[in-house]
Length: 211
Image 1 (tube, rainbow, N blue to C red):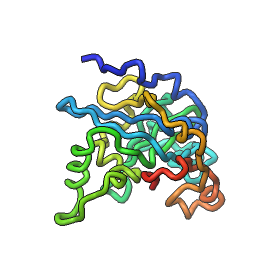
Image 2: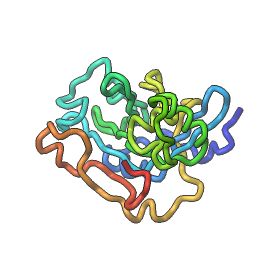
Image 3: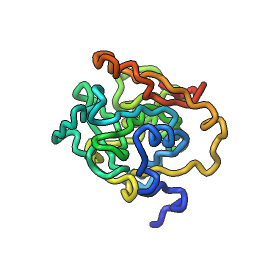
Image 4: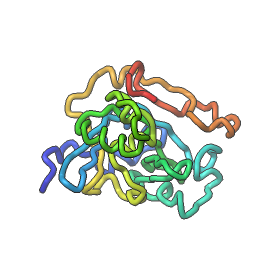
């Protein structure tokens, strides 16, 4: 079955840009996850972080270090890098131009498939936990992986060609998304000295789904 919005899908050329410009370019784009039953879950990217590779002390590839875990960071732009944090949660990144450079997807605005997203998030929460608000479904890197069912095995897949997960241009973009991009320090990397303070986090000003 050909996807009806094939014209909107972002191809290899989109991902072939330096890490910082890709981190900004991803804002306002739509992450699509096609589930096994054909249902499509969609979320608009509203927050990203750039990890610049070799020189970036906070990057998994700092010093050009290649490991079994971070191989995707050294693969062609548009390769998915999924890694676990705290042993249980996952984060999704997209490789860019630049040796070992990748962009972390930090937060999405849920656009389609919210009822499925709620089920997927609830399955990972304690019984009796309060009902999540829509804006809380994908407002963090591991939350968006739960809500869109991004598994560890998506690591090293190619966003330009994969049949189960891809990125699209927003067919009706909000001009606000691009006029007010906020630049800030990244989150959760306090131990990395000066690199902890560098303004490599980008988000849409005032968006309710920013983490």
